[in-house]
Length: 473
Image (cartoon, rainbow, N blue to C red; front, side, top):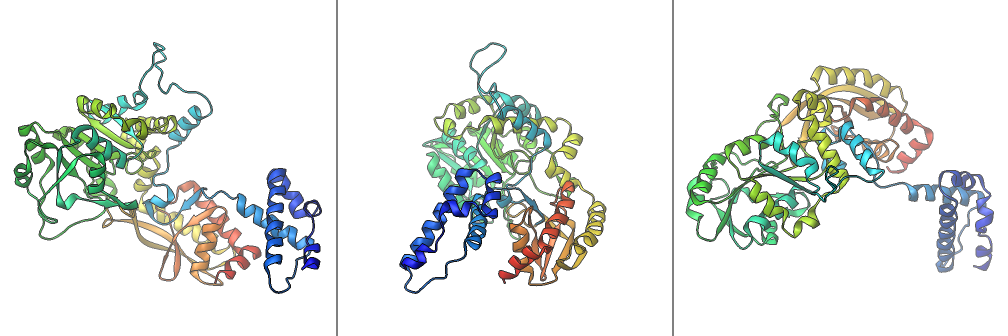
């Protein structure tokens, strides 16, 4: 054992070998030294605890291994990915990409100070929501607006602000669960409101709401069930029917529309998504929706509606816990600014631009890309194929969007190895496997990323990349 330990080179000796010497120029000297020490400490521990003799690599081999290990350790887990899955609002990939205007706005305020809670005209303290409230009220027709960090927070703080200790009437068919074990009954319990469910899973009538109203009722809640569809023998009341009940009993009606469309998406083939403006026009007292889904902005939860109710929500102690920062507000303001002209929004908001891309355009891109991808070397076949994309894994799951893909078959190994190699490569690419081929769906690939797909396949075809991918078989 002592002989084996003596064969382990010192830190200073290893630092003179080219792999580590060159790594100092890309990572800091301290990072490399610390990495070498940590690696050698682990090696010594393994030698001391091993019952049998171990083969200690040569200093050159050790330097190579340590350099690879440090490089892998330094690689950020959060990094850019080319979304070729065909799921436009992919939760795992960060949902909607931001418009260039939103990115520029974030950059402008990120590098220094900003007028987050200061009115520059008066020099007095202001509220941070002022940065977006004017645009939100203009675009939705609401009296007032506020913003929190996501739509789950919007639901929680709205219920806490207007109905703590009171019953909130909601259809049993709308007691949704979404990703991350978010369950509406549990959110309602956490808010301090009391769940009063009415109707059945498949049938709820306006009369069920009316019958449930009592002196202890605090609000009526309508929830858009975007991630599932109940079909067949069904019935549910229209929003205007609930508003009529709310007016009769002087109760606020809360409309949680979920994904948050500001424009009609029928032209893109997306049906049944409520529009915030329509809910306000119908008379909803509060409308809740996400900023990072159909709106195509940063992650946040938006609340618009009657001024008196918005003020109650903003004064709730939870507002400080749920408030958004200057980066979110700047990105949201820039995104909302684009919606002042729907034609501009369609061109500049990436989600809308992807939805609006003509099918012939996608076909042309697929036909142009296929031979370039096939020529990279690691691919046996690359074929343009027509298929269907989806808006989101949990949003309007039954609605398909026509698309074109490039279907790849690896020249060696299997399709899972190809998918893994592209997913872990630079640039990282995520596609979807179908019929033993990897599909790169261009409906969710930004036009400027086409050549990056070629780069990713070129890197895969290199001998080192190929060897690594085959090792995963």
